[in-house]
Length: 409
Image 1: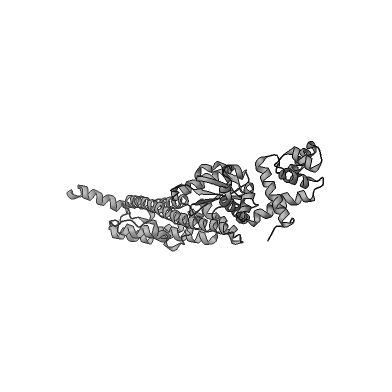
Image 2 (image 1 turned 90 degrees about the vertical axis):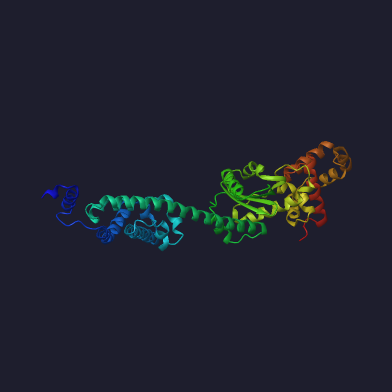
């Protein structure tokens, strides 16, 4: 009777009382009780998922089944570790082993951490039922320690997935830009740019210029973010020493391209024609690249310069598209116009751009020549009285006279 008052006896009585008169259980028996409660924990976790987690209910059926596997795997891994607490806790890698890697696209890191918190709550909520009396606190502390390791491992897995996805996106982006540079515009292009996050709203254009030195992955990613802020959609490609930007959106794309001028290296920067959508961006890329090749022929060109402003220089490099454009937009409309505008333009250019000399050749008043030249400007959009634009018209006039109005194939 005297020994019953010792601390050990008091603890024994307390434990026996907590066990409703049963003998104290060993830790091994407690682990077995936790294992036996595995099914109850899994069922409770899935019930909480369905009742309390809106994003889980919105997932497709296949993804929901994978999330259920992840939750069940996490609880199983915890119970296995609880039996051997001296070992390093298993990470979230075992949890995701039964699910495809694409699941990280369906549920975010925030959702994964919410899943971990839910499992912790479930174990804590049922700790009194599954743990032997006296082991409840140990079970709670164990699940908290395990959840911390799971959270760190989850962050590592999502960081690794983001790195892999970023590398894949960079390769896909390079393929898309390369296809545009080559002039490919097949139906697969739209699906590829959609995979890169291209919204498809608005028009598109291509900008080319010399690449800045040391444009590494970090600077390229920064340029891509800046381009998307300026235009909405953007793709970045590096082709040798050339930087190729594909911009898209509903705003002023030319202004957006101009705002990115400082991201190019020295030398000309050429903006291709605006096209209806990215599937037609190969046309804009072709014009921009042709303009970049011809830009040295116009040393005083603005920076950036539109590819259509380099039509005469592009003709000199053998660009058939530029030749056809000049004939179609300048020579043919003047040829079809009334009022001798084509004859007047030819006389004006042929007399050294002198109104009086042209008037004498045509036997008209200089004001008549001036009036007809204004008509030329209205018809073509190029002003014969401007030195640069008169050069454009002179090249167009020469092409039209060489081909009789039809450009060579």
